[in-house]
Length: 327
Image (cartoon, rainbow, N blue to C red; front, side, top):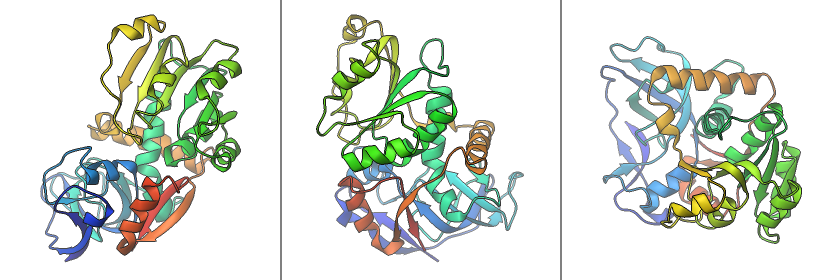
């Protein structure tokens, strides 16, 4: 048996309940893992609220770390007793023990704690595919300007540090002066408080009117229009979230008028469909963390039983860095 967080209908944090579930043996291509720590992410809110519609009843959570308890037929990269971490479909990481597909579960280096492993996989792999795989025409070179919204969040703080290590000039945005200071302390060259400043005007000023090569945006509706106007000609608008709500439909013709710019909607799960891609991305992330180029900030910790409070804090934008759930 295992305790797990489950919802029977979409709604607010109050729909999440702790329930007892039976955990069986892993089938072919699966493992059973006993969690040590669990990551909290905005995608969990989207799935709980119904922005992303999934069948009910639904167990939530996309990221965790723990110890492998059993291995199914055909799994060769993991063995019983391995320390492991993952960001993976299907949801269900908000629990003590689970059976799950093995292909996106990676062996966790001894130098990385369970807590850091749980906090870093979904957010760190997201930063990896954005900065290394979601690139404007001609790619990114040292000295290029990029704009990164929500720079003091879990993905943002990782991206600030990693971008600096790559020589990029990252302009961050955040919703308070304190969050801007945090982003700058973690490698953002500039950070704009979009609650008090016009970030479009500020970006144009910083770049001498040229604009940025790419905008990385997990905020969505509230930042969309001005973000398009921050781009240099042939620049890339890379949307990867909807924290303020979904972006409304728009006419493709506006992209030509704004400089023949590109738009893409990215998801981590498109990038980790194969075992090989997942491991290659994870190896890059592990190297960035163990080398010290990227430090994972765990700024909030909640017991699993306080999952409702954790979601409330995340939605109210009261969190910075990463949040983990403990068992």
